[in-house]
Amino acid sequence: MKKRTFGPGIFIGGFLLYMLIPIVATYMFSVATRWDRTILPEGLTFEWYKTAFADRWFLIVFKHSLVISLSTVIASMVIIVPTAYWVHLRVPEARPILDFISTLPFAIPGVVLALGLIRLYARPPWMLARTPAMLVAAYVIFTMPFMYRPVVNSLKAVNIKVLTEAAQSLGSSWIRTLGQVILPNIMPGIISGGLLVFATIFGEFTIATFLVGARFKTFPMQLVYYTRRDGRIASAYSVISFSIAWVSSLVILWIATSWAKRSSSGGSVVGKDISSR
Amino acid sequence: MKSVPSHHTKRKGRWLDWIPILPFLLLCFAIMILPLFFMLWGSFTSADGQFTLQHYAEMQASIYAKSFKNSILLSGVTAIIGVAFGSVVGYFICQLKSKRAQELVTALCDVTSNFSGAPLAFAFIVVLGSNGVLTLALQKYLGWGIYPEFSIYSFSGLILSYSYFQLPLMVLLIIPAIAGLRREWKEAAFGLGASNFQYWRHVGIPILSPAITAGLLLLFANAFGAYATAYTLTEFRYPLVTLQIGFLMKGEVFRDPGAGDAMGILALLLMSISILLYQFVSKRGIKWQR
Image (tube, rainbow over all chains, first blue to last red):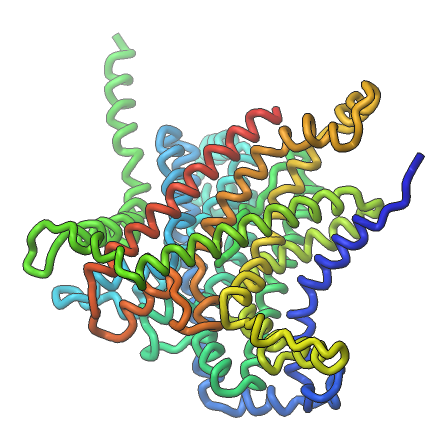
């Protein structure tokens, strides 16, 4: 009855090749001496990494991207977590409004967000648009769905109303309730959201290049610069960028699966369903 | 007697309850809503402050019209490629015997759907650029020169590199829907004498159709808004909506702010429609599956 077919193998095999070849090739290219005469690289070298690290710009752009990404993660947590908690506890009628607002960034291309901010805030009365602070504010909005959804899903998974009332009947203040009772319970959502925001912002090129540009060069800007100047150094930058992205993704997946095993209620705590463009 | 004042304080309390949300709402207003409304206003205002439709009329100029045509084509084609192949790959992943293999391929999709922008574009230059590893290998070992018919810096290259982040996203979207296809339905259909084709034509595809439609809409928006991948590959040489907007605001002084605003608003309109329809369709899909 059962026919042996090659369809599944061909499709999955082809898919895996398409997904893996560009990544593997970039990793190999970054440690290859010469790779234009033979099917495999002629030798192994760390020269390109050495050259990349020796350039003083490397540390500068890495630090800039790190500072911007971490600031965005912290600002996003500080603004979104208490808001989501409060809305779920006390203002349920605002929930649809927040759910709607939190999906808006999906509909705004980064380049359009940058255009709007520059048009409005880069004019004489303000002159705010081209500052790192404005970049962080734009990033908090741009990545809002990544933080809001996992946090909301976590809030739904635990009974925050009962937890809050229990804490308060024992005399706990609002701040203490949030910090010591609610936060530990929704940690997986917050960490997943934070990692996704971090990975997205660390690799974000478009908004950064238009808002701050050469005034505050970030890692992806330098990567794009090298793709035109020196492919070897660009490959070292790409590998670092790739590695940060996949390590973050794997940690998020690991949190999601280990949490799903622990809690019976199911429901993904990871809110990602659109890529980071 | 007692219920009246408590009702009163409760009402007052309800109003005060909104205050802690204000910082969040203010941020959204200042960083997202206000700039977009300013763009909308700018797109209808001439240089001397009068109402005008001229900026939208300008969109008929060949470069803008071409950008919209290319962007819609690129997003549409890669959405269809992503949905078609992504659904099939997703189906075969669900059929894998080993749970471990399923998890591994899904994890790969999760990782690769996040690979976009400059590193992705560069990876494709390494593989299929004019001196790319695969380009040279094909030339040397198969005598097949893919250039100049194919070029990673042109439309064909954009299709190939955009499909790279579209495909795994679709796989992630379709897997839950395929997992919702019950074995009993298939058995019932076959028990009644249906062929494999008839099962898919009358049972499988109709059940998956909300997920497929949602996938098309989301993938379209996903590609339409992309910038960094196309910029790294083509700089401003290939006319796309996002690249054209970027080109207009490159540098400190705007060449043509009104045209930028009009383009931005039109792009926003297209994206919003896709995303709203996507949410509508995927919510209906969820309701249906219950």
